[in-house]
Image (tube, rainbow, N blue to C red; front, side, top):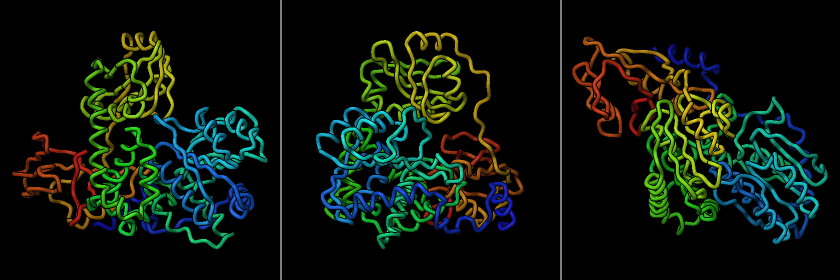
Length: 489
């Protein structure tokens, strides 16, 4: 039963049963990658007295992108100066340009950002600084670049390239240099896997699943990763532990601390204090969230919830999305969290119904994912939106893979389903099962989760942790330390 069921699920997902074990393609059809790698080898790695800077991007993908590039350069005796923007600002800007010039850099590497920053790239080129961008975000280039002093390697430039994370692009770049220099770089692959999870990359891409598999297999060999609790599920290990900690460091304004922690993963003294540091940072983040909730005004409208405040844009910029997520979970309707400075409101959208395109029709500027993005709007347009907005479409529905009576599936099937969900994500939805009670098939299961009373089956009635009793619920199987667990969707 398990084999046939899984074959159907794999087929529906557009992959074959062996795909999770498949090795990635050894080479990419990307001539520009080899060209830029050779230029950097000749002008940076084997050349003496070159001053190099790396601009880390302000998220987990940007952190590990910068780390693996810095580590590789330092292994080749290249001293690196690291930078990261404040307040979740991405890419090149006037402030970091001043720092690059003041530090008299010869080369700047921008990772996980920067593709559309042509005017800043040209400015640096005129100041004698060469620029290499390693990125994966869609972009528009409005100016012509100097192709002898600046290079952009972005997987969105060629449709045949896999949709990697920013760290995946950096790794492929390092790997290409390593081929010529005889270096071993496979130890970086687990970090690429973390960024595939953190950046919600396309999991239908075999290469992305390969890196995630490496992250699951190799966390035990890294002193930094060893400090986090393992839940039994690899996805939970990273999504509930590693990734939130690093994101929290950035949100609370400790960007440099985040970079130092990542670049000292083998420092026993620092790593032994990590649990205490994690609690400190998460507590600091919680206080920032509480402060925003306390000092903002909540508007609960029919089709949207708004949280509005004034004059603390920097704080809101870093934790606004987190607050919006919390309110979305509480009210089960789209949330706008905004701060007003002058006549402009800026903040975040998190939605389960309308998209950013609906906001654009109402005068908003929206950048990011359809249902999770940064937004900006003039006060008069926001007032109009609050008075007139009506959403007539449908709420995002949970797609159920199949329905099954209680007690019908053996543990082996649940474990196979849970293993599949380890690699679920964008364009490869997780398996969700509707559990339907029938008197004859019901069995007494006191607990199927490591969280007490998550889901309880008693006398053919399903009770979840909210104490609601229903004839059916939708659950997602994920791995636990002993076998599997069922989490209500």
